[in-house]
Length: 123
Image (tube, rainbow, N blue to C red):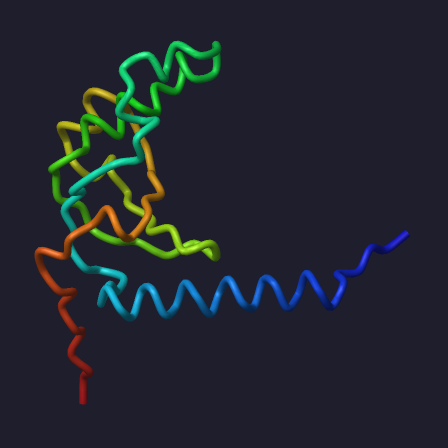
């Protein structure tokens, strides 16, 4: 049996997407911008956060976020809920300590340090 989305959930999703575009525009963030992580969620600041369960211990999420705090990364995309995609494993230091990782950050915790370079159109 096929399941269809209700009009209410479609409207809610559209509202979230619109709000995220406005937040992104207000902060002036674009794909390719270099941003510095200026802060992280309060729960991730707790050194015992990763000790909560086996999955957290294995993934070391809070430790990764704390390690990336203050570092500069490139924006690779934007999620539908307003989070910014950062491919942190492009940094050799992060990759050496944590392997391949992508993190999703709230845009309020980022500060743009360099605008994306515009690609030249060839004639």
